[in-house]
Length: 331
Image (cartoon, rainbow, N blue to C red; front, side, top):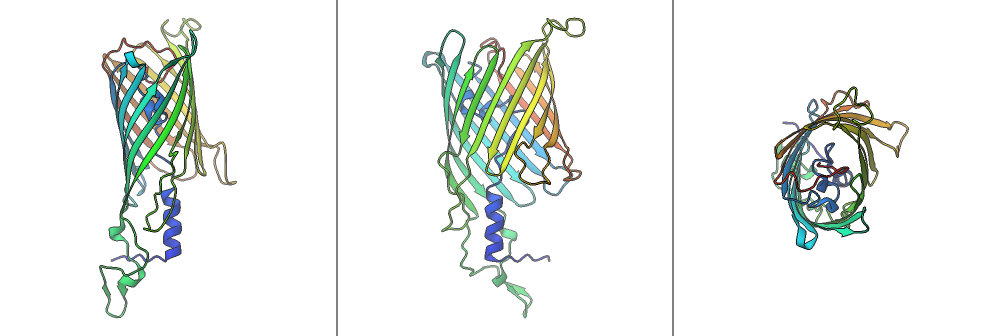
């Protein structure tokens, strides 16, 4: 049997870093925009529901699976969107499991004949659990008798599962052609310490995103269908020492979408950091009320052969004519 021993300082240091790892993110955030900004709640001005599955590092023992699901609807008489969302994030190597359920609300404000504003709020209940069942502390090992005590008397008391309330807010500005939004998650900085007397606030997650969609068929009618559109997008995220900037574009045909984004690390912390961390290819298919999405992230750093990152998404929009959005995600 392979035994692992840890000291207090090593254990606390490791899990302090581990606990403050970045929030789960999606390459195809435009299919589930509520995942980055609660201001998008009910944005399509109809009832819709969707799921997203993400698997990363399939060639390594550090395989990570993330699942997200949402449902939202639009209340026209109240100029409001309401919804719920669920997130599950699992790391196979560490046994770490993160669950969170959220309630979202957004309110539409007409600024003028062209611009609208949507402030939004999200309140969630989160739970994090850890695979401590395979962890051995020093006092559990009796070398002389070659036995293992199943119970530790170590003064460091650990919580195998922690629970917390989480609050996020967002703001979205948009027209028929362009949108820009900003959001902050973990406004209340919930305590996610695993030690009973510990205090590790969850670091706030900052996001700025935007997009612009325009007709392309009018410019290049020789090669593309007249209805072809192009969307340019940007999405900057920062949480603690982690940061990421996604820049990309996509061609939108009548029922098919194909595009590419680059994941950048604009605030490199060390000389070994890579500016370009991955190139992400995605495609989408719209069939009646359904929208399907697939993406693959190809790693460009020196981390080795990770197997890349795969995402599969599915969205159902109850009324496809409710909002003819020209410049917004989830179109």
